[in-house]
Picture 1: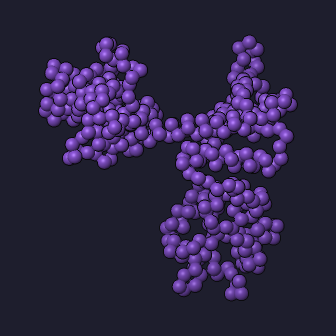
Picture 2 (picture 1 turned 45 degrees about the vertical axis):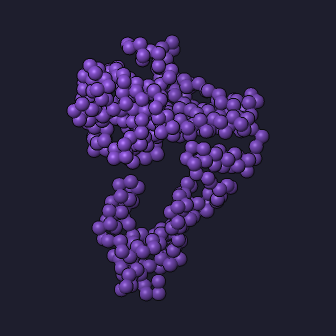
Picture 3 (picture 1 turned 90 degrees about the horizontal axis):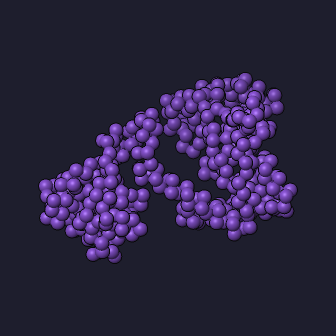
Length: 384
């Protein structure tokens, strides 16, 4: 390895953090070649590291014989470069790049590792099949979108730890291998080598352990913990997941709500730069189910459920009358401007409800210029 590389590992710069204030300084960078353009005597390389992309310029008159090395660079080669940071000419400024006003003019280049031609360009990742994405998962991590998500996740967890530490919570790891206990799903089982025909169970939650900690006097515990549930995949279910697990002693319900509100407010402010207003709106379980039909309502939806049981109890539509007679209710959602919804869209909604919620149909009425329009309006008497 070149001597200049060994000397500068600790002095490296990060591509996305370079700016015009460093003009004229010698810069050392390590990263991957994202794009390259050979314009005969001048080669432009977009060098990417975790923080961003910077344009590196290799000029034949400056590099001499070393210019042939720059000519060998291809997509996703791993590079070490040294050069001088300069402002770009006005006509070459790239407003789409964070570092689009500057570039690094090379005086040293080393190819640390070559790469085979990637099976797809990172720019075309959204057009690639899921199977190919998973096969080349490491290329997925090089995409800016996923990389930023991973960094946000890190910042998210870091904010949780900082907040709870200030609130006198103690982070304690609990065992992963345990005996099976009654939970909401099936356990993942691990055979015991020392005890034939016996099994450990991976935890669905650290419930028993955190209760032991409370009995033991730890009072405030938390953990960013991996949990395992052997159940069918759904939009909000997967076999393994990470959760924030907490337990308090000597607190009221109001204190618990306030602590969680403060935690969420802090995370949004520090990680996403969004200021939330607390306390958050609160409602009872009964209110949530009555007005939204869910114990985790999305208040942005706005269209609350309306109970029309009294209106439909005497109609000729057995689906409605049967529900009321059996002690149930009939509720509807009023969609502002819904009269413009087409028959095709309604059929798509019906198919979605059948597929995802096993619903047998979708009853609807549209109020247009000619009154009510629906396949069930004839089931209602005029007084209704």
